[in-house]
Image: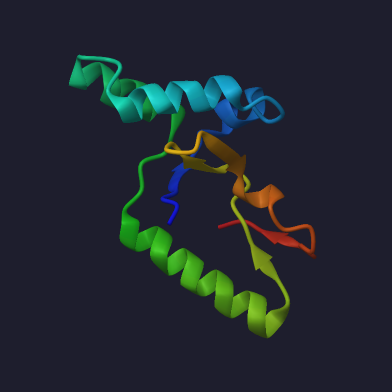
Length: 107
């Protein structure tokens, strides 16, 4: 079974890496693997790249997403959600995974 990590990427960072994710993934992978020894530096770097969020918030977001998708034929997407599978070195923007998206609503 694959394990995915979700990152809400800062808007300015997302703009820079919109079409070339390899460098962004490499930075996040370094944070994940602990390549940087200083914990304070790792936290600072993470906060420069990503928006911290609580797991409960993202779980509720996806539960609501499924409800809205099923009942209203609308999709709620934050196009800055990056999905990483560090074990398989796979990464992608969540918003680019569904080609049937009819409309976007931002929270």
